[in-house]
Amino acid sequence: MAMSTRVYNWYIALVAAMCMVLYGYDASVFNAAQGSANWLLWFDLDLPALTPLDTKKKDANLIGLVNTAYTIGAIVAGWFFGGPIADYFGRRVGMALGCFVTIIATFLQAFAPWHNLGCFIGGRVLIGIGQGMALTAGPIYIGEVSPPEIRGKIMTFWQMFYSVGSFIAYWIAYATNQYKERLGHWDWRMVVIFQLLVPTLILILLPFQPESPRWWIKRHNNVEAARKALRTIRATEQEVEDELLAIREAIEFENEAVSGSYYALFKDPSVRKRMYLAFVLNVGQQLSGQGTLNSYSSAIYKTIWADDSTINLINALNATCGILFTLNAMWTADRFGRRWLLIVGAIGMAICMMIVPIVGATTPNVVGADGKLTKTQPVGISIVFLLFLFIFFYKPSWGATVWIWTAEVFSMNVRAQAVGMCSQMQNVANTIFQQFFPIFLANEGLKCLFFFMTSNILLAAFTFFFIPETKQVPLEEIDTLFGGQNHVEKGGQMLGVPDAHHAEVGEEAAEAQQKETSKEITEV
Image (tube, rainbow, N blue to C red; front, side):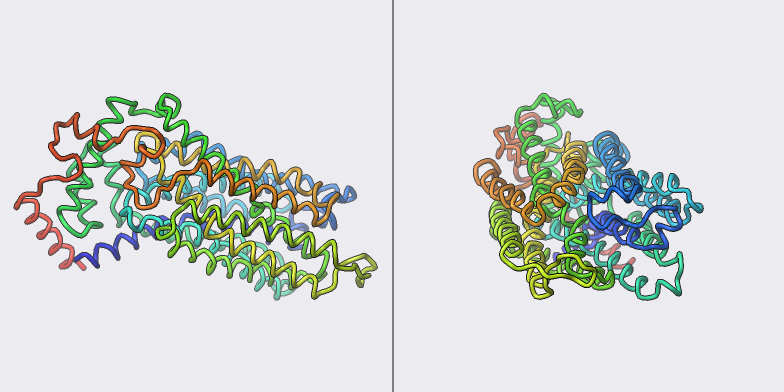
């Protein structure tokens, strides 16, 4: 029984984690689409600029607007209605609605009329809105259904599925590029339309898994529905009743002593502290250099390889390695802790960002086939290796662990809204960096990476001095790490419970679980 509930726990959490595939796919799909001459022709756009500051390409800013449209939708959804939807209608509805909007938006992009870029941009905005909702509800659901001892392992897959999305997008782009003459305008349409695959699968699976037990109590005070949900994902009746009691105690305290509304975001000093720390961590995820390099690594590769097929292959291999590298968080997040991963990851990324510009500055330039100065292929390969090594350090640390930490540190009364706001700080930061990095890259070349080296050193120091360890701490007791009160113990006093951490389990409850288990086995 213990094994079957644990496996089912993993299954429902992984269905929710698949929402991150939407983000990873979209982060790569536009870069792949704009590399298609057919896409540019369909929307009557100039060829891409050879350098980020090529003023002869009058449509460069317009193409940049298409990319920015996504972040606008995501920020609006994450800050203003992703949290309320997940809180009012449920975590599953938040994920499902986000997936549904993504499907509608995919059709708008894939079948935008001839020369109608506005329709494509509208689809990009809707994609951002849909993902803003799904990326708010998804990590909350995973954190609320996962037991503390494996919460870090399960949340690792949240970041890994980002790499899965990139993996699918880049390999499809690579395959369609090989047959672009035969496919015509379908070369970019196929890359876009495959975005339907994962959200459709999520929509099919979500109705058949339980809602978060914490949501049942917080929204409807429905203890029986919460108990039924917990019995499908916890091994014993004692575990079910203990967790149920802890949830009730924490929510009772939050409603009576703090605030049952989002007002606690500003009223409770410990919640404000968590907001500030989570803001820095999520902005730091972009300051590390990963988001910017994900958009502009191709521009760096183009200085070495003129063949688009080679660059597409490198990007596809990068996404493939990203999946493997993220798995390192599975055995480190709950063993060594979140702080250890963040500090080691930042130091490793800083070293990579120091070596890459040194290699670029100390190796000679050669005249390429087009008459321009470039690097030799051995130098190019060494730079690619270092950027892959950067991903090795980034994925399990500032990739996976930032999401783990953000999703688990907030109390139930503000969790959905706080996670939505904090996670979208990634897009706020990325939008700002996307504006100045092309100029930085054009003026300084690879020396601009020293900026990211410095940022990562500062992020390691920030983590060491300000970020508390949260591994294996129950969600309802995490407030104590930030100077807040223990919501379980205080809530237990309000409810008049003799032992705030352990519930009494009678024979009737044990019998009820046995019957429920027998029923599930029969149905299966």
